[in-house]
Image (cartoon, rainbow, N blue to C red; front, side):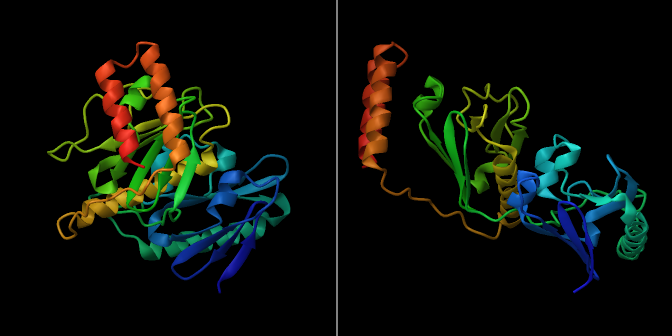
Amino acid sequence: MGDVLAGIHATWEFESDSVLIRFERGIRTPKLFQALGERRIPHEALSSVSLTPGKRGTVVLHAVPRAGADPLVEAAAGQLKESGDPYRLVLPADRETLAEYYADELRAALDRTRGRSQGLPLGQEPAERYLVSAPEPPLNFKAYDGKASFDGERVVFRWFWTGASSAKWKAGDQNLPVGELQGVEWRSPELFDGYLRLLRRDADGTAPAQPAPVDHDPTAVVFGLGYGPVHESLPFAAAVLEAVQGAATNRAAVPVHAVVSGRRDPADVADRIRHLGELHQAGLVTDEEFTAKKTELLAEL
């Protein structure tokens, strides 16, 4: 066990090759921190360390991750607020001397660990792979127009009849193996038009150039007030990103297995057929599309 520095929302344990961050549980702790629980950050995943004055009599110890080292940070793409940054340890100002000691110790550890690459400053070279583990699946959350779930091998979107567009209903529920994905695009639900989009690979391995608008894209779920909160959707996006990178690394060595979906809940099928009928009556679905989709839904029983 290494030295421990306890902050307001987390405790950092300094080990020989990493920093173990344990997030506190409590009503004042950001929900993202509670969802993450515990994270081990290898020294090689860090770029720099700083200690700065905080708000209302605090100081902030900030460990900056290298680009490409943490799938959570990559998925967030700079959209997290300072208060939601899991690499910031906020401490009372009277612990500044102790925090400075650990900051110096951590800087020295980083200097021993990292080296120069491609002429870039120490610690600034992008990581070639994720060095920090994403939250482990299974993971799921409710968006405005559907439920997203991830079991480590595939992402499933099941549409809600109250929120999904006719385009998504026509496309049907989505069951996407990570081997078919290029990446993810996460726009924070704290913004006006938040969403999670899965980026599929074309046959040549690239991502499609011009995806459809998210409310009509069957590979995207739309957030809304109370739907897809950060502490649920961001860890989800990070876990998918990590799995996509693993699939890309092992694609040549690991065979792709077909995934057979299980039997559908009859009540769920009935709701979907009912909504399909409403779309048909409204003229949004043709007779042929109605018949084909109804047959497809009934076959899932």
